[in-house]
Amino acid sequence: MSLFAADGLVMDFGGLRAVDGVSFQIEPGEVFTIIGPNGAGKTTIFNLVSRIYEPTAGRLIFDGEDITRVAPHEVARRGIARTFQNIELFEHATVLQNLLLGRHAHKRSRFVEELLFLPRVRALELEHREAVEKVIDFLDLQPHRDSLVVNLAYGVRKVVEVARALCTRPRLLLLDEPSSGLSVEETEGMAFWIQDIRTILGVTVLMVEHDMSLVSSVSDRVLAVNYGRPIALGTAREVQEHPEVIKAYLGA
Image (cartoon, rainbow, N blue to C red; front, side, top):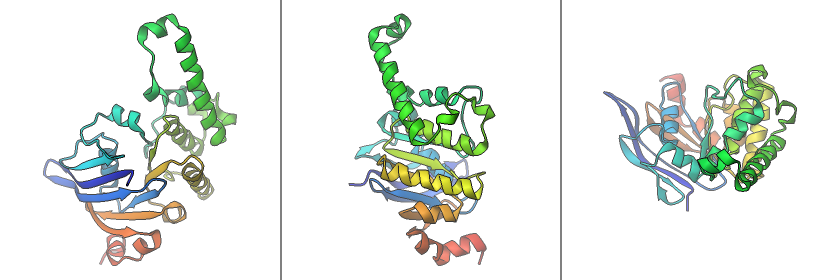
């Protein structure tokens, strides 16, 4: 059974149809990538999957459950996490503090327990800290753990945002243009992390990306969209060679 499925997604903004009948399935352990020219509707699809937008029509199925009307924070609790094209970190907090925020979806203590800092709260804090430290070790962020985000290089911030998403212990990780703003060397490093996230952590990945070298190196399957509609689905090579994809990028 597929881990995630989008069935006939439609998204209207007034008179503009940004997503028009998009359907796809993602298998467990797969890296599935959505590509397309600017304005093709890729990020809108991401915002539908992460429940930032309410679809005009269509369904979202995660692990056999219809999550089309589930609240965004409940989607995170179910095991879906995402990053953003424009980095959304707390710049004047440390890397460690930002990552601990990623554990909020697993909060199980009550306000009174936290106020009194009862033993159960202390045990949960240790559990959250251990989970965060494992992610720090996994992504080699030890040199930056106590640094303020505002003082970090852009490439390191991108890794920190991935780390915060991983701290929620997702089953499906949404990466919104992870190579955006990165150098060639940093993009190669991001490809390394994506492969390890899939193979070592067993996390399924849904990615939106422009850099075709990254897409080709990590993707199992690729969906190309244009004007909100799917135009090709297959391996990275098959999609790049598809006439409709060539036409969408280069013109008739």
